[in-house]
Image (cartoon, rainbow, N blue to C red; front, side, top):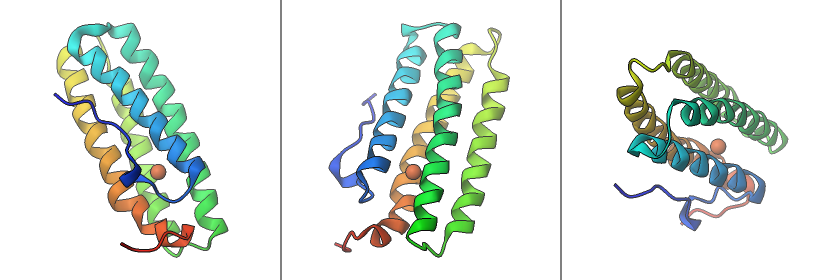
Length: 135
Ligand SMILES: [Fe+2]
């Protein structure tokens, strides 16, 4: 399976937020590695804890930026951020040795789908407010 990577086409028009998104891809790559047998439960638990913190940090910064540029869909994005933060937290609670393989595969698929959706669908909505001209 191809490793998901950040590319220029995923830029949201902010170097800071692009850097956050790049880091999220790095964390997902680490989970992917663990899913393919390159790490055990400890690796996944560690990355998940880091991911939970980093997602919360990214959302806070993103929302602050949306507020700054008077993005009109802030409330909608805030709700979506909350739902995802809750889901990731819930998955982090579920990790245990018994269901480890299934869990990691499910976690990886969910996060990859979420990250692409988060950037390409949701975050692209604020791109014009960051001064990015539509294609
Ligand atoms: Fe984002």
